[in-house]
Length: 101
Ligand SMILES: [Zn+2]
Image 1: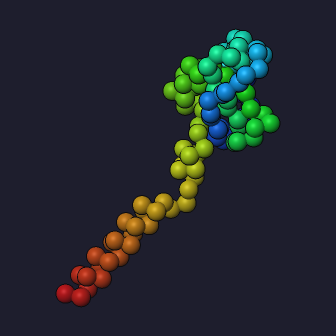
Image 2: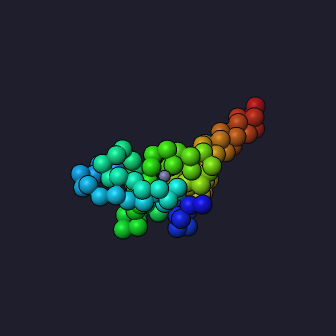
């Protein structure tokens, strides 16, 4: 079970660490050497609460749908998308053309 705080979305970026520290992955609880390739995740972009995690654990969490990225969350919560506004406008124009005939 993961020890992640609740967050609507996460920022995820590749970690570039020069410090020989060891972190604990919040997904699997196993140690994570800072010099190994891994990623930094931050709840809703809050870097003060960022966590170091194994890349494979992040990918697995993504597959389980547990780690929503900011752009995914924004896409889901955006009020009428540009696409649907354009479609509406297109329908209105079709109606106007028919009325002209
Ligand atoms: Zn892990």
